[in-house]
Image (cartoon, rainbow, N blue to C red; front, side):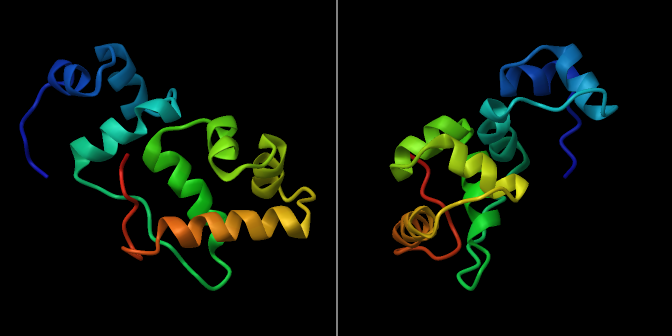
Length: 120
């Protein structure tokens, strides 16, 4: 992608400071998940692809990134405790019922378009 924009232009588009852009570029820091939707939009990139056979863990995490929501917000959408999502990512215990709720949530999200998350 060649847009020939300055860091200040990109910062304005995303809604951050120029120093944030600089820090991300040199890997001094990472953007907050709340900025991900704007970054993906700017890059014309969609991180989400649903993997129906066992890939629900990564799909769920990617869904969170695409929408730029916190673990707690994602848990509310699913109707589960936020600790379950954190445990899923770290390999901690997640009950079978909670796992089924997560899978069901993703299946419903991807029902119409299996490879695209509908942006709300």
